[in-house]
Amino acid sequence: MTTGAARREDTDAVLLDAAALGDRAAFDELVRRHTPRMHRVALRVVGDAVEAEDVVQDAWVAVWRGLGRFRGDAAASTWLHRVVTNAALAHVRRRRLTVPLDTVLDAAAADAGDGPERSAVRNETSQIVLRAVATLEPSQRAPLVLRELEGMSYEEVAAVLGVPVPALHSRLHRARASLLSTLRELR
Image (cartoon, rainbow, N blue to C red):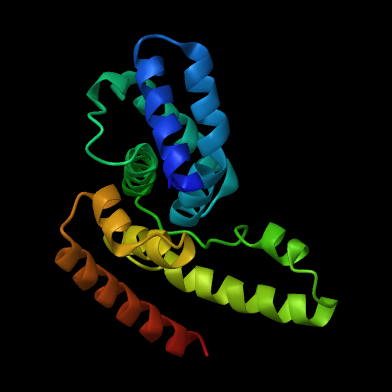
């Protein structure tokens, strides 16, 4: 039995193949399907909504140019996450600044459905955590965002970042330790 996620990955791979042959409608469908999640990843890495839009646009340009290089060794979504993560990290390196991730959870707080007090406390806590995440080095921030905020498995994150799983575990351990230290200082 094929799961919905597996079917979606299969159709994503078909769409990538069709786009590589010049089918613009297939590429447009990929953009429609994957832009929201790619934007979330970019936003959490770069910390600014406008810059995240630029990063996603850069990532889609890179995907278009690299369609012929997709070999299917990984899932299409993994490849797309790798492209947007690399674009976001390149953007952060070019900028050489680390900025607060203030705008990330505004929509999540609005969708929470809880009372205003609870939403305010959760939003304030989220903002503190996201500011602490923003202080991490990009090599620690990206795996933490993908694993903890996007909920990807260790294997998926390792594939996106192009590192072995044990190296990912080390990066995540350092990121969590740095994050904990920063959060203690913010108290």
